[in-house]
Amino acid sequence: MEGSSLYQTYSRANLEFVRGEGVWLETSDGRRFLDCAAGIAVNSLGHSHPGLVKALKDQADKLWHVSNVYAIEGQEAFARKLAQATFADRVFCTNSGAEALECAIKTARRYFYAKGEPERIDIITFEGAFHGRTLATIAAGGQEKYLEGFGPKAPGFIQVPFGDHEALLAAIGDTTAGLLIEPIQGEGGIRPVPTEYLRELRRLCDDKGILLILDEVQTGVGRTGKLFAHEWAGITPDIMAVAKGIGGGFPLGACLATEEAASGMKPGTHGTTYGGNPLAMAVGNAVLDVVLADGFLDSVQKKGLLLKQKLAAVVDGHPAIFEEIRGKGLMLGLKCRVINTELLSHFREAGVLAVGAGDNVLRIMPPLTITEAEIEEAVSRIDQAATAMEAGLERGAAE
Image (cartoon, rainbow, N blue to C red):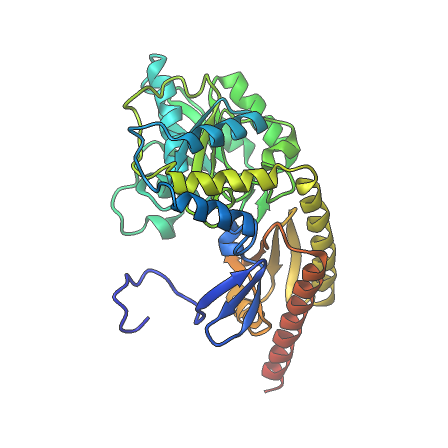
């Protein structure tokens, strides 16, 4: 990045991709990589999916932007599909996951304000969470590395230790508006919330009269083999934020809510200039048409199981490199014994892409369209990378 005019906020890999197709990415010098990062769980249908490309091109010839001053046909269709497939009655379209979380937080606070309880603003979150990069969402996540240097932490967010139920009970009070949690922590290291605990959180919110808010930005849109990860627990939230895979690579997010939870959001209380624009809606609708088609999610479940089984064998075969495998569906994590970023370099040398996470984890999140043959290839390359790192460790020990 030396000589670049860009903000120096990214530690970028020395890779620049110029084209992609399916699960493959290609650099300008012709090197091909099997993409098991999917743009951090964004390219849900892979690169250059023909249905998405057609939807975007067709819409680009018609209309790009009019703002939310006017009705947008694609938004109505998009919201209707989500409402029919989920718990939600209302949908607000955004450009990103952080914006979807901002809307979710505002929806929860506004709900109690409209009920005559304006003091109920506190959102309880869980250690290790990641909810975005805005001032509100870094406060919600509560991680010091993201808060440092940005002034006072935005008020109204209380973190409790992950899985500490007694601490959670102690944190709930007269000013509590809701609980915000990821069904599987992504940035936090592919840490699943146990099914029974999600059910307990639902019961707790019902008992205390507070709102359950789910962050399914990374876990949603088929990533775990269900349309949304909370479905595995047989529960529904009051409010949910989604993004990443919903746009298949195009910037798109959404906040979903029940009629009751959204009841405080009246005209003028929230808005966005670009959110739900015709281009995003064309792509979002195309993504949902594919993911909601008969058999698609079943295929993700089967491929997720296959990938996890094969990666488990790699973990067993390299005990000096890996500790365990975590996750569900095509949202998996390899907990490393070596430094994850060093292992990631070996992955790239082997021509496979992954993405780091907290707790010394490498995330394996390929497009949902990956084939069984491509799973075999990905696992082979990961095994090759682990073998190469082992060899390096042995040489270092000998020296």
